[in-house]
Length: 63
Image (cartoon, rainbow, N blue to C red; front, side, top):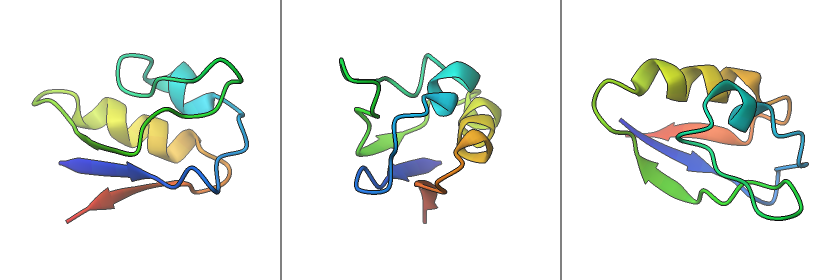
């Protein structure tokens, strides 16, 4: 599984990082540091939780 964060949509709510802090890292201002990320095996559900938590729908899966 691969995810992409559209940083232009990120509003810094940090809900993705709250749901899955090992996957979604934040910069000093609380915005996502993730551009694209290969989700490690076994962490797919955490990635989905972070994606679902984003009110801006800035996180998508890459196929």
